[in-house]
Length: 198
Image (cartoon, rainbow, N blue to C red; front, side):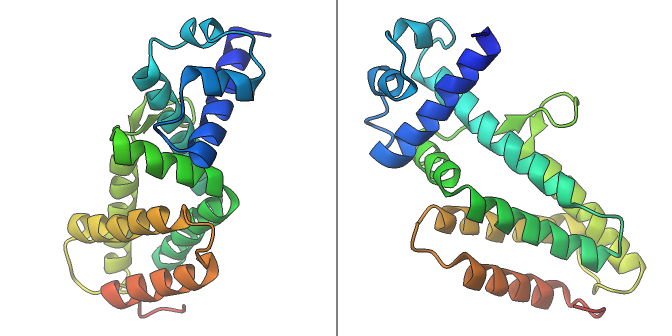
């Protein structure tokens, strides 16, 4: 197995362990057992310690999250792009509940600024990337008269705060993501007064 494949194997096992057993119980020995490894040394070879592994897990989840959202984006109207952004976020959260639960548990114990390499570009803070992109969509919506006047950067931050709250809720297996998604879209729509087709 290549080093890259081994690292991916450890990260996947760590996500499952954190989601199913909790952050405090996610020891190298438990992760090694779940990954089918004969020794924790195979983890230590790739990761300097638990903090290093948790950073890699966080980057892996946020990187896949960002890639999914970017892949769903289109070049339609600003209102359409905003809806697509929100729905793509909800799709990923719904389809990757273990990832969301692991991420929530890691950040509750060890907040890490998520960074991820997307489309071969240097690592950037995922939240900053989302805020920059959203602010640009909101500005274009204002230019076309779809959105009311407001500070795009500030409102982009508000929208992401709502999105991040949904991330926390998505970690709960009992959460109704369809209902949550409907409320999120309605709240954002009311916030920016989308006057175009909904």
